[in-house]
Image (spheres, rainbow, N blue to C red):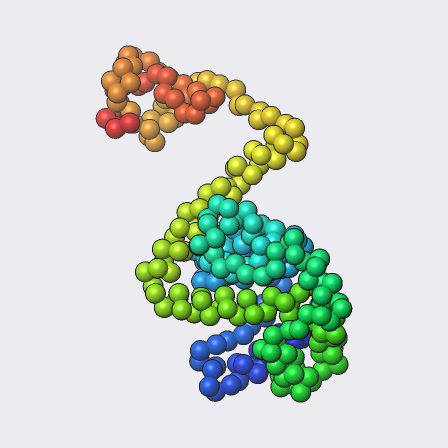
Length: 265
C-alpha cells in the first residue's frame, strides 16, 4: 500500500512542470548493499524517522553519517547512540520521546488529540484523489486517522515540518553545513566494526582473541624486493640471512640483510 502511494506521489511530482526540475521522487526497489554503496556517499540528508521506542532505526544511519550525510531523525534505536557520539547539534532531532509515547497514544485513541491543520490538509488532498485514486489508499488514510495513529505520525508531523524548514535554511550556509557534516562523520569512529566485534566478544559471546603464533622466520630473499631496510635504524647487526616478524605485537623487525638499501623507518 505504501509503495503504491509513493509511486503515485512520484508520478504527480515528477510530472509537475513547476517543480519537476527541482524535486524528484523515486522508490528504489530491491534495495541492497550494492545500491547503498552508491546512494550513501551521494546523500546530504538521511531520514530515520521511526516512532521512538520502536527500535526500528538500525545501522543504516551510521553508514550514511560515515559518508557525510546529516541525519534527520527521531530519538529511536541507533539514533540515540549516534546523538551521543556525534552530538545532537550535528543532527536534526524531532518527535515524541519514548517516555511520552504511551500517553500520546491514549490521547490519539480517545481523540483528545487534535492533529495540526497541515496534517489534516494532506489527508484531505489524499481523500480527494489529488495524487490518484486506488482502493488501498483508504486503508492508509484510516491507519493514521480516526484514533488509529499507532505510530504517532499526526503527533510528530509539526515538528517534522519544522525540522525540514530548519534544514532548508541551514543548507544555504555552505560553510556551516560542511562543518556539521564533517563533525558528524568524525564522530562515527566509535561505530567501527572492530570495536563492535570486540564488545560483542567480551560482553555477549564470552570469547577471547586467538593470537597468531610468532615470531615467524621469513626468508629475506623472498621479501627483499618489497622491504628494503637500513639495519642501523634499529641498531641491528648485519650478516644475518633472515628477518623475523613478531606477530604478537604487530610487525617488528628482528634481524636484517647485510646489504640493504636505506629505508626510513
